[in-house]
Image 1 (spheres, rainbow, N blue to C red):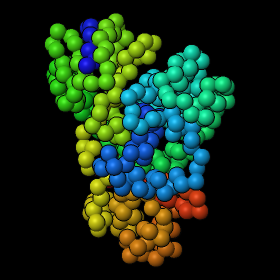
Image 2 (image 1 turned 30 degrees about the vertical axis):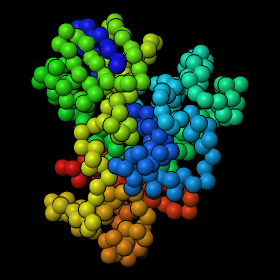
Image 3 (image 1 turned 60 degrees about the vertical axis):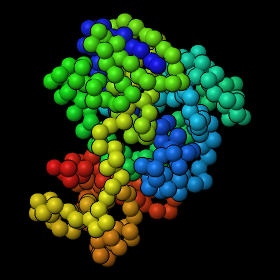
Image 4 (image 1 turned 45 degrees about the vertical axis):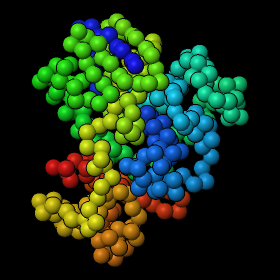
Length: 321
């Protein structure tokens, strides 16, 4: 059991944030034990194929499965509400050496980890490179969808906090979390026995798509106390209609072909795949994707010899609207 004692100052300093770097860490747990994460099966199959052949041994060794605990330096609590991956990686690379060494001491020894321990600067550079390659292949094409879901959750939580205070917020966060009006937040965790007085440091709440049903927390100083929890609507994240159809209103604005292509990009796809889904010629699809790309509605991601197209945040907002 983890017990966090929050003062009035801590509640006043409670904030929300997204963390792409944490999703890197958590998604590796999914890939290493896909049978335990049925919800993400479609993503895991696709990501594993895209990651084939990449040397990610250090990154994978830093995320053991089963997971008792994870080094905090892998994903330090974000300092802004919506950091990008580069910002979070830069923060991790600026950490003091003793924080990195204490994190490495949590892990079983492997050749990659021992090489990291022997040269922390080279190890952090190698880790940053592997994180970037993993992100490009496994998460970047899906990030707009993930981010949209998490931002919707943050909006919901912010409204709960404004409408009903801490009692309303924490009652709806996760089954493992309970709130005592006297000021104690309890997290049911059989792997930890922690009682921490936050002392005005505040609390950071981070929704995590790949965390499964678990609640992950960082409570030890000097990190800002952080609780990572599953967002609302997670079960619908990877669902897509068998025959994609665009809303009539969107088709009226973009035209039926471009609207249909956006609807078909429920998951990243290559031009030939979209041509089959939408019953169009590959040449016609390529032309329309070029227009959507210039308008900022789709992004391109090269994976091996293939170029995948994915919806951007702007496109996700249009379709949600």
